[in-house]
Image (cartoon, rainbow over all chains, first blue to last red; front, side):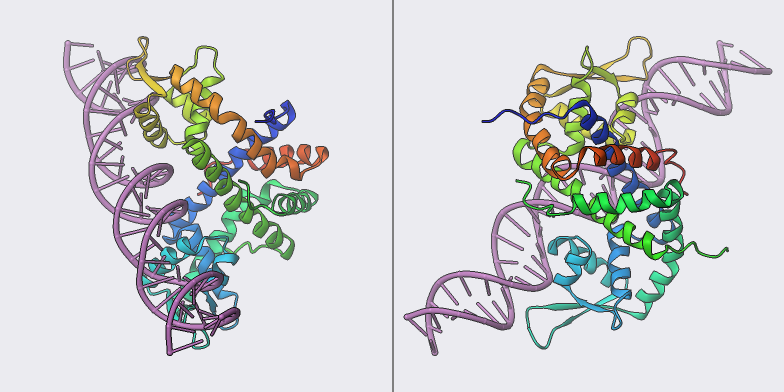
Amino acid sequence: MDEPRWLTDEQQQAWRKLVEVLVKVPAALEGQLQRDAGLTHMGYLVLSTLSERDDRRLPMSRLAKKASASLSRLSHVVARLEAQGWVRRERDPEDGRVQIAVLTEDGYAKVVEAAPGHADSVQQLVFDRLTTPQVRQLTKLCEALLDAPDEPR
Amino acid sequence: MDEPRWLTDEQQQAWRKLVEVLVKVPAALEGQLQRDAGLTHMGYLVLSTLSERDDRRLPMSRLAKKASASLSRLSHVVARLEAQGWVRRERDPEDGRVQIAVLTEDGYAKVVEAAPGHADSVQQLVFDRLTTPQVRQLTKLCEALLDAPDEPR
DNA sequence: ACCTTACTCTTGACGCTTCAAGAAAGTCGA
DNA sequence: TCGACTTTCTTGAAGCGTCAAGAGTAAGGT
């Protein structure tokens, strides 16, 4: 057992603010989407990801990666979206294991309805508070944090 | 109904990465604490917040603010921590409405046990990936995002 | 052909968070 | 002192996410 890698004061300060962001920003987002559209953020992410594809369809596993969700989580989310009639599942004829999530017309309409409110809430939460150079900094910082973010063990 | 405030391409790019951070960093943190200490991040936050007080006690409402939690959420969290024997609740003699959360000896031991692993995981997830100037940028950015983060309506 | 292994996805149980409701104590004015 | 109102906190139900297990399909080796 090695020496613990304690945080310096400067790191402490940064970490505390980051934690606050990590808690509050998702909560605010979730709240807006829930109130105004009856959607989870993950639900919205799935619908909007599908809506960006020309054919409005994606295999579950690819969708999971795009939405940063576990397969299990995605499966539950899509099951709920399917129950609402916003998504339908089809089996891939090429590979009987893969299920393809397909955005329905109602689902597309739902994204179109929810998108302006969501965009506005993102503006309020993030971009109204940052200068353009800060937006670039933010992008760089996030890229750094995501560099190889797995196996935290 | 006004014109929707759509995101520019640069904002889109920043937002997508930020969302990824917002999903993955908490998940990694939660995972490490759950595996290594059997604690929620919020549970750890509550214990460590209490441990920083000289008398190891704080009223629920102040604790909720420090941990960025709703009172309801805190109440559930503290109930679980209390069931584990890590926290105890006392009624404030000055004001019968307020409950004071008190860190027990076992609770203090629990923080001491969990802290090194947590610190290490924060280092891996964040500070190993950033230069010192970037840490300062991160602090500034978070402050901007938290400036008046409420009433997102 | 068969068996093993790997891959994709689903399921159910359990735990945590949210939300709406409400209990209990304090405060203030009439 | 009474009542209305506010503040602080708790509760229970419902929804969402995680985890472990497993079903179904494909691929590779013998």
